[in-house]
Length: 43
Image 1 (cartoon, rainbow, N blue to C red):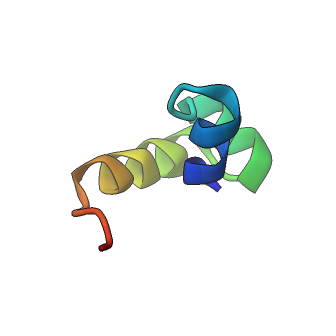
Image 2 (cartoon, rainbow, N blue to C red; image 1 turned 180 degrees about the horizontal axis):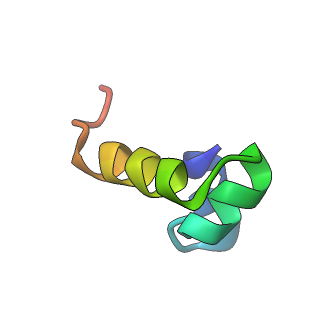
Image 3 (spheres, one colour; image 1 turned 135 degrees about the vertical axis):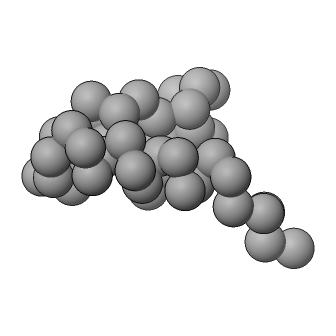
């Protein structure tokens, strides 16, 4: 979802947008973004 958003919008997904789309708490959205930003990219 985050990658599709970045491709479509030309910018990384925000915590608030991620939270709204997944229906999760602000804390979980923050944790997910932190994980996405630190994970190595797949080949």
